[in-house]
Image (cartoon, rainbow, N blue to C red; front, side):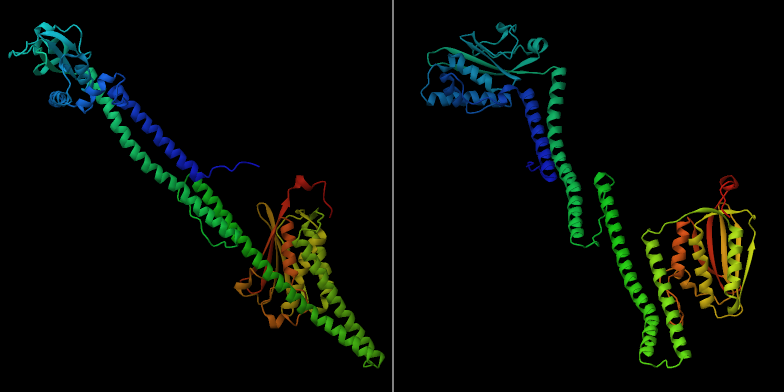
Length: 507
């Protein structure tokens, strides 16, 4: 079993905390460089004798000469109160005091005008004999000290020990050289900068964490909504980074799902409408067959003439049902892409002329005339599945014959050659159709006038089948109302250049 990995929020917060800890460690490191090992020293020393002296001082890291002198006097009082004696003539006392001062503050102590303690902070070559004697008030050798060692005497304190020894302590202040001062300024500025940057980094990190986690929370909420079937929650991209790209991709997926759901709803609505239309179109011929069959069984058709009439009506209605079922099967196969096509190179002019000759004979009794006008070359060739494309043109012409009341009905076919295709137009001299229906007449079972078409036999799939077949020919089909009146069905088909069909033409 795979171990559970940390969440992105946890990782971000751990990264932030780690960065803060590293910054704090760096700050302490710089502080150690600036202030030395005293930053981490304990108040207690290993030597027990120094514990009492350190306690007597009761301070660490004196900041000024004034504080240093006061602290020595106070330590003297504290030690006397504790009963300590002769501590002024011990080096431990002055060493602890010197250790407590800042690096710039140091001590030189004389006992009976002889050196007792000299701070290790000072140069060992300082000439101690130039220092004033006990009780002597005079000019300090500051000119010499500053010129040679950048140090000056700031305080002189005279004490008398319990045993009568005379003790003189000098507090000195060293001046950093320019390079040292510059170095310390840089380090102190680094400390300040790191402190400020830590605060700023914390604020920025908080906003960065929110800029990642808030969009992710929105995505999680939207994903849960999609899982529940709610596709209306919009996800807005608030940035152009990877999180923003993820939000955009999720929003595109949501819109696609929403569109698919709408298409599915439309398909379901169309399916129900198709079932209703099929039931309606089948009901009339099936009812007629049933009634005539019952009439025959009941003996209503008593004469041979009536019997022949009933049987002929039953045969015609059976033909209507058979035609309807055939077209339903064809449309279903086309819609599911199960219908096979056999394309061949066909001379369009000859193909159309053969059809017109056939139609002239078939529709002679319906007062319908046909004409063909072509501006294409006589040998213009297109790739056609002859059987299926013939169905396209037959369906268009049958619609015109069924739904156009004008007689004589004139059906005009024309062809014109464009850049990459041939345009075939089939027009009639009827009244056309309302503009709002021009795009919809190719939908299955679409009816312009329900009352008018309910009495006209047919499946309502003719133009829908025509569109599917034209699309399989890599063409397009649409309807237009002619300026002079009537409806024109236009079909664009890609044509072959002469080199492509010279040796591969079937008709």
